[in-house]
Length: 75
Image 1 (cartoon, helix red, strand yellow):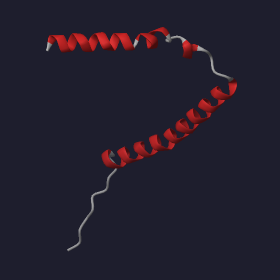
Image 2: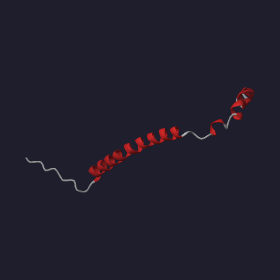
Image 3: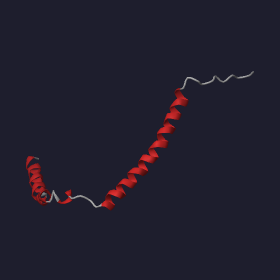
Image 4: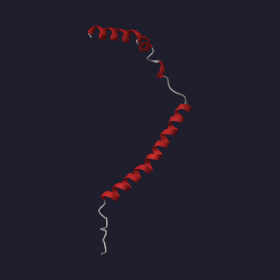
């Protein structure tokens, strides 16, 4: 069991050395179009959160509000 674990760790470290050497490739800044693209989708998400929040507040007021009228049953 120990030999199998040791061999697995050696293989993992041996084959992942190139991935450790290439760690700084994606650190460059994106272009203006990438920023605008991400900003556009961020605005879509924010504009969908506003009505959802208002609806959730309305539901909670309806469930836990104090001005609920008692329903009278006529017999």
